[in-house]
Image (tube, rainbow, N blue to C red):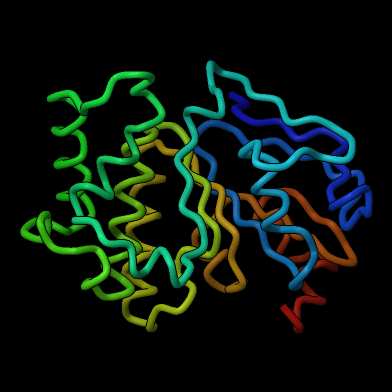
Length: 230
């Protein structure tokens, strides 16, 4: 069943298009990897899906009872985020903020959800540690736990392993794969085409050629054959 439909999208800034005529859909339980050259519009596409920017034309539709509030988002890390002065629990709990409305406190069930996701991400025992004191891999796990507090339906991940060492990168990919197997839909930007084709079942390639479809079809496509400069 479809959860997300992007139809005839033209994306860019101040009416200067960088990507035109893009259409694709994401089904419940999919693992979609978005790959392509730098500057091709991958992050712009994610921000459009999240409603952070508007497309020049086209539309983003939600189905199967999904809304933007049901999307958990793991953005690329910035220096400011890495130095964020809050505890692990505080950062993870903030993922519940979208459902709080005017309520100034977290409920018992929200605190239990945060604790569950902290444990799920292998962070048990670090709840009171300052986020900025953690390693890069631990910080990404915290942010993933935060995203899980926002949703159990769909996660949008913008280069979640950027800057991590190979061992931690592999661990992160395995965590994401496990979440997908548990029923959570994944949309992930990746520069690592090998990892994308190892884990994802659907590929969206953005570049001189645009491809959207099953991984098996992508591996025999012109878009994949010309990926040398990704």
